[in-house]
Length: 208
Image 1 (cartoon, helix red, strand yellow):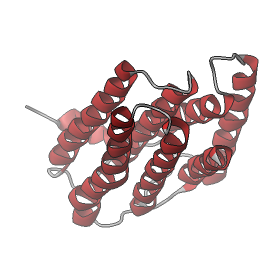
Image 2: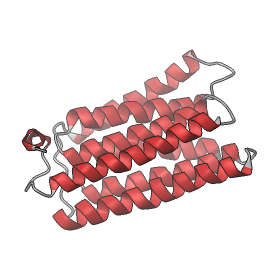
Image 3: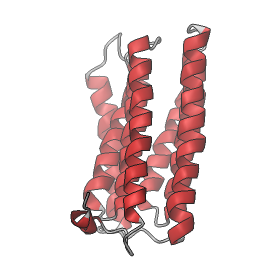
Image 4: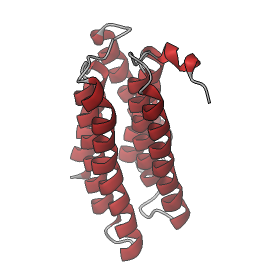
């Protein structure tokens, strides 16, 4: 079951590489959060009940509900469902992300260890590098935010890759990371209200 969820997670990464609408990006981020919720429940259901509840609530409320809703109400609803400008052709992005997933799979097996779960490590590395790729090849701040959230999801999977049980320190680190992303997104979106476009070049106009 977990392997199927990881495969679907990989498919969302491929879809994100060729997505052209802001709503599509936002919906895929919510889908990724939902997949992480189910993966976390299946993998950590033997964990201490309070730790498990903390992780599941964090994943469901923050990643699936709060962030997508916040982005939709604060940015997409105000500016409209704008198309995302693709700096490189979609087929190139599709190829690059597919290669990233393939090499993530190879790297996972090359680093195969009893302490590392290959399925999680593959999805984590693929998500991190896909997020970095989207940030590099797109000029819109919206896409940069989506890339950051994809990287964050990859880090969440990476924490599952290091063992069957997630230590409390890792739980707190993931929770802090989520709230930090909410803060950063809030700052970005509030500042972007002053711009007529979402081009990243306009960030140099930000002032205190």
